Image (cartoon, rainbow over all chains, first blue to last red; front, side, top):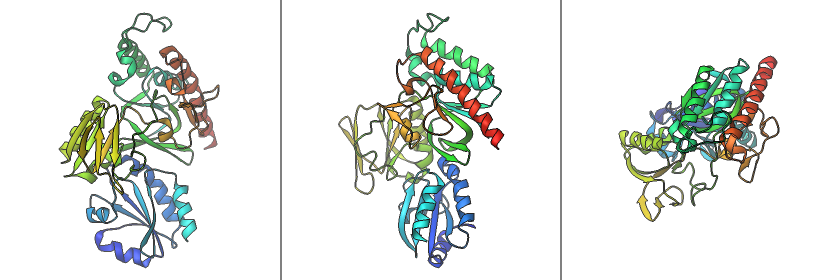
Length: 104
Length: 272
């Protein structure tokens, strides 16, 4: 299940998940819309194994700043709460699942 | 909305492709910059376009566009920034929006792949190709726009309207972008601006930036006799496939690419 994360929920959710993937996006961003179906599919595919979250950078500017998001979409991978990788820009879903498979 | 074929580029190749997709009864969307920004628009006289001698580039483009419109092609002004295959379709981002189609015809003309020093290294870390995508992340901060078209000026105005402090560089020959983890400054033709972001707004993205993995040779897209590229469902036509860089050659290639793309879409539809 896809989780929409906010500043209030972010740390609790991320720390509770051994592996997490967070998509920083906004609704004025075309490339983000392109990525959305892939992110949805990954959330379903890895249900119960990976926390797949989304952060709206307009609603949560502090989270965007904290992760130094300078272009969207940016997808950040976290293991036990620590960033292990990030991918910037639109790319096929396999690129993301590859990172997940290597770190599950 | 989903189309059978999406054409990138509104010159002779793209418009010819669109007319021929429509001739096969398939839906088509043409995404292009304004016609006035097409290099052909500035050609004083085109004398070797069969049957229509002596037209100016602008007249020729206007007639070709009208033909494509009458054929039932849909049009959209904008610049394609990225593409990604998703299942059996191609998703294409256009500024802050997106479209999808079963097949794509790349007919965006010649785009130089040569990048400025610092550009590739700092892409996504302060180097951006899309003001409407990333502008909001730089509200209230100094940014530079390196613009090569009239649309770039409009994008600069958009950035000002959302509160960016914009330095505009008009058609510089060369720029150097510096910074370690993030952009710090940009120097264009000797003038330096300290900025958090550099928006590089060229007329078109280089084909290999648009389609990761696209085969090119000597800067031109590699195609077969059907104008098919090495990527499934992606065809190319016109100047982007190589010389001679002329309208009649582009229109001919557009015809083939349009028919090939329509056939691809028909086959994809059958497969479900």
